[in-house]
Image (cartoon, rainbow, N blue to C red; front, side, top):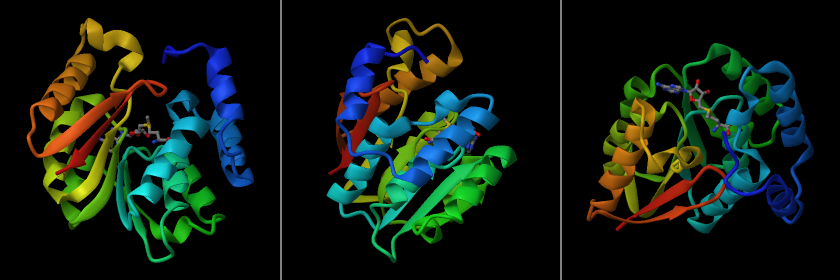
Amino acid sequence: MKSLVSPELEDYAARHTTPEPELLAELCAATQAGMALPQMQVGLVEGSFLKMLVALTSARRVVEIGMFTGYSALMMASALPPDGRLFTCDVDPEACAMARSFFARSPHGEKIEILMGPAKETLPRIPGPVDLVFIDADKTGYPHYYDLMVEKVRPGGLLVFDNMLWSGEVLNPADEETRALVATARRVQDDPRVENVLLTIRDGMLLARRL
Ligand SMILES: C[S@@+](CC[C@H](N)C(=O)[O-])C[C@H]1O[C@@H](n2cnc3c(N)ncnc32)[C@H](O)[C@@H]1O
C-alpha cells in the first residue's frame, strides 16, 4: 500500500493520537513478526478513528468484515459497553488463531464473536439492526457487502469502507479489485438511503450514514 501522505506526517499524526494500549502494541509486533502481509492491519491512527466512531455513535452492535489478526476488532470493541457485541468475519485460520489468542487476553475480548468462512455466507446469519459496519476484506466483495448490510444498519448508523482510494489506483482503474472499489463508491454516492463522505485517512475511508 502506497502511503497517500508522507511517512513523516503519518508519524506526526500517530504521535498526536492517544497512545496504543500495551496489548495492541504487542499484537502489532506479533503481526509484523509472524504474518506475510502485516501492512493489512489498520494501525493506530485509523484504529483510533474507528474506536472514536463506535463511541460517537454510541454503538452497541458492530459488524466487521475482514478481521485479520484482530487489531481493528479490539480497537472497536474497547469502545463498546460491557454488553455490546462485535461480530467479525474472516477466512484465514492462521490470522484467526492469532486474533483469538489476543482476544483471550483483553478485557474486551468477550464482546467479540468470530464468524469463520466467506463473509457472503456468514453475514446473513447476523440479525439486524446494527449500529456500525466496518468493511475491510476482499475488495471485489465490497458491492455485495454493501447490499447485504445497508438495510441492517439502523437510521443514524454507519457503514465504513477501508481502502477506498487504493493507493490512488481509483483514478485509473485497471484491474478487477480497483473497478469494484470504484463501483462501490458510485453505488454509495447514488444511494438516497445514505449520506456519505470519502476521507483521505490512510488509504481512504468512505463513511456512509443511514438516513
Ligand atoms: C485488510 S485485512 C483486515 C485487517 C484488519 N481489519 C485489521 O485491522 O487488522 C483483510 C482480511 O479479510 C479477509 N478476507 C478476505 N476475503 C474474505 C472473505 N471472502 N470473507 C471474509 N474475510 C475475508 C482476509 O483473510 C484478511 O484477513
